[in-house]
Structures are given as structure tokens and as C-alpha cells.
Amino acid sequence: MTAFRELHDPNVIARPAEDWLEPGPYVGREAFMRFVEQARDTWDADAAEPITELVDLADHVVVRMIWRTAGRGPESNIEFTIVYTVRKGRIFTVEYIWDHAEALEAVGLSEGDGHTESS
Image 1 (cartoon, rainbow, N blue to C red):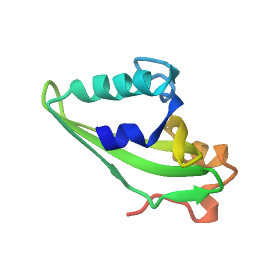
Image 2: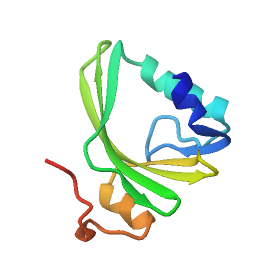
Image 3: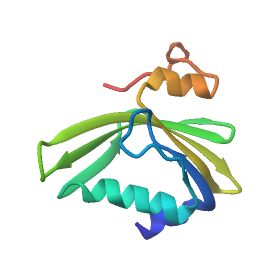
């Protein structure tokens, strides 16, 4: 988690997906790290992996993810897209969006631009 933490600006702003249990936003690296750690602590095991190529557009990076969880209740596979805004080499904003097409639209793209989920 230390390397992940250091990727983020000290003043990072993170917005969870709509209807997430804890609505946020989370302001500051410490608040964001607590949010991530609390979400991960919900299960005994978890892994997040990209299911699309990274889309790099100016100061934005967009990636569709799947978060696989196990333990303490049913296993789950949660899909979402993350829109990162990068400033001065660090992640300044993090926005989680359920709908991949909506996330692409947020940065001025569409799935018709060839930015679809990989199989």
C-alpha cells in the first residue's frame, strides 16, 4: 500500500461511484487511503485487475477494473471504471464510475472511439 499511497497527491480528491455505501468525496491522501483500506478490510481476500487497456488522454487516465473479493459473505466481482486526473506526476483526482461509457464521456471519448472492454 505504500507505493499505491505515494502515487497520490497529498490533496487528492476521490469520489466513489454513485450509490456507494460511503458517498464521499474523500479529500486528502489520508482520507482516501482510509476509504480504500476500509473497503478492502470488508473481505478476507481481494484483488483488482484491469479489464481494458489504459486510456491516456492529456492529464486523464481511464481504466475499466474488476474487483474480485472473497471471504466474510458471498464472493463478488465488482466492475467499475476509474478516471484519474494526474498533475505534476501524481494522481490528483480519482473518480469511480459504474458505467464505462459514462466514464469515457467524462473525458470526451466514446466507446465508438475504439475504447471498449477487452474480451
